Length: 473
Figure 1 (spheres, rainbow, N blue to C red):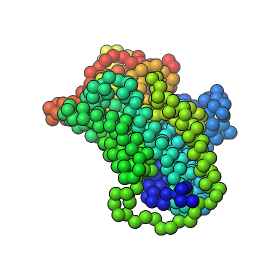
Figure 2: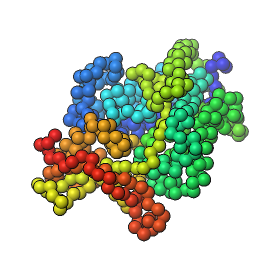
Figure 3: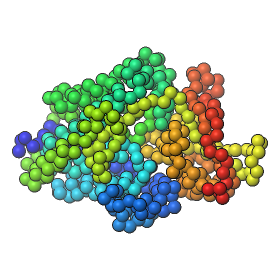
Figure 4: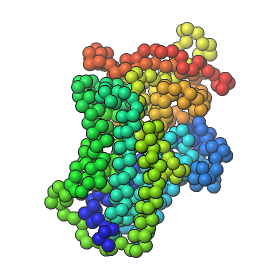
């Protein structure tokens, strides 16, 4: 079955599978570490309340059978353990059917988490991980050569990720078309990284080159993925380089790393260098060929909806067309903020609020807060609360379902909630009042950094939420 197998992509498959398993591992660990405060039985948006209002077919999840925090933790840690085993090569040590069952189990478990995660799991990279994870079921293991059809479906997915992101930019904010978006984006992105200050202060002509390079990488290069070798390898390598640039300039959870992993479906080192290929591998069983053929036909059919969306003048970003998150549409940053605003949460131990009341700030792990604190590198780990605080600063309506319950838990010094923060200014006893204020942040200039040793400068915009006590919720 020479038409079915592509033994020269043995290294690409290895990196695809181990990379996808590594991202699964990070995602399951993040779920285990953050769920109690966010969606646990006594969390900000409790899963039991959500399940009571949604049917299984609308939100497929094993938690429709039964939910408890203990079960959620067990699912998360079992998923992490299974992912770690695949990273270590366990899927190559078992029969082909068992390897497929392993990948299917990981997909079902993470789908179950995403579908009850509500706002906290509404990010495009959740669907991307699920789509890649489902694709891995049909990539086989070391017992057979990589299936050509599955590799092509991976390339098609990469094309949709990159080309969709490029289109949404060209159709969106004018700054993408006049090449000025990066005058602002490194400063106003959701969660800057340790190098973002330096990227922001690059010369403006270089920012324009960055944007032009991004358009080339997302609108032109993806077509090369379907070209003969070595063109496909060069196109995939170009995507890897541009994604590493994004990794260095910000914190976008595992989005960039998933895109890099997908690029290995098109990289054939032997087309450029004299690299030895894998040893002869047995022909795939007939049943596996049939399963992969059915999978390919189904994926091509489901591609109708995201491709129609990409061609639409009203293209939508990061949308799933089915509750199983299979064959989705992607895209990000169709519009770019020109100024950065941050919601700062404060508490006080005073029983009476006056002009002299002393307020202490809560500090988050990832989002900007303390002016002298250099932003940290968190990606590919995902700090869900920090990301949503960025959206809260943009639109109070977006934060309406979860921000007040979050503040209520701060007034009780809820342990699981405080674990999501970097610093609790009230370790001995909870505050009597909390409030939220809105600030405008900007990166300091080089001169201000030398003088004040501060990475940020901020100006008070006004009150976001007034002081509230526990009995006022």
